[in-house]
Length: 183
Image (cartoon, rainbow, N blue to C red):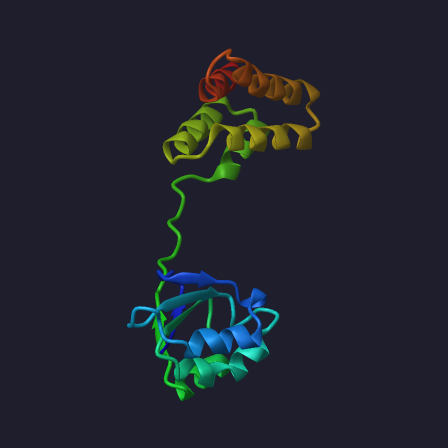
């Protein structure tokens, strides 16, 4: 049996398609399990890898096997779908939800620094930390903006804050908040 799982991961013995020889594939597919029953083999990226054509030619071998072969793919195009349906493969497609929108505009923090707007910068920092953004990422964004502004003083101060936090002078979030309030 062939199962193609798009967007999902399945359990079973993981095999690396690129490392398997054609004879090994035929042996795995035709040899019964030692204690009876069937085995499940999982291969990722076989449909669109370097040996994709060879895989498509081997579909009959997989479909006639007493074992289950699960092919995990990110996407499935029409030509491959048709070929898989022709040999009786079971297709399982998982619809992934759209990524959640962030509750803040990360570049809004940089714009507030560029405008030297203390209140907007502080509010943006609080929103970013509340939304789960890492302080290191926010500090990097602020350093980028300071360099873009060609403000050596702000850039040095932000780099100093970053290094001070790693030296134990305080948490980076609090040091960035203090920086925003002193702006």
